[in-house]
Length: 109
Length: 115
Image (cartoon, rainbow over all chains, first blue to last red):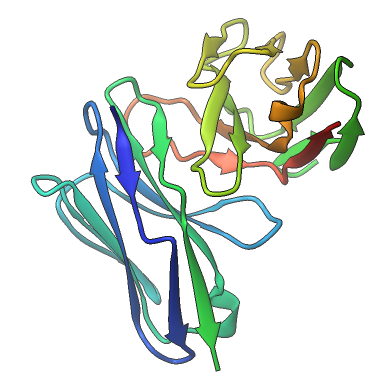
């Protein structure tokens, strides 16, 4: 079966750095996405990786290793507004997105 | 309209009733999707449409139907609602073009409770 694993919950301090990991086992790979979802709201797109390596976008970076079936989302200079769930999703061989259950990130002052 | 909209925002429904959730996008995206999101689970695909006039089944299609008469609208119908269909429903769309990320953009969601 297909599986996306990410931690259920993480806690970090305002101003710090946090890394959210995602491991996947899917039938085929056609890209990996990270989305942010605030409570009661829709998921919003953060980043996309299809080749190995690091993609940087402001305070957020995403890394991919296809050989290890592994990605992480790195958030720097954490702000209170970063408190949200972060969803990892992989596009499989059928070009459908398979979603992880999400990681709830709690930021403390 | 800007982006993708859904209606209603929330609904309480008696079991056995028929219900249609509406979704409209103004981005001229080819592809549209319906997901449900339940606590502790990832988003699960119900149905999708790669282009107007075509639809396909996702991971959890039973009890749901869709139609895609035009590019903009993609309604989801529950023919006879059951309590297990209590969930938050998200509609999404993507350009549907070959190559590139084909990023999905989500509507605000419909919170449905079936009693």
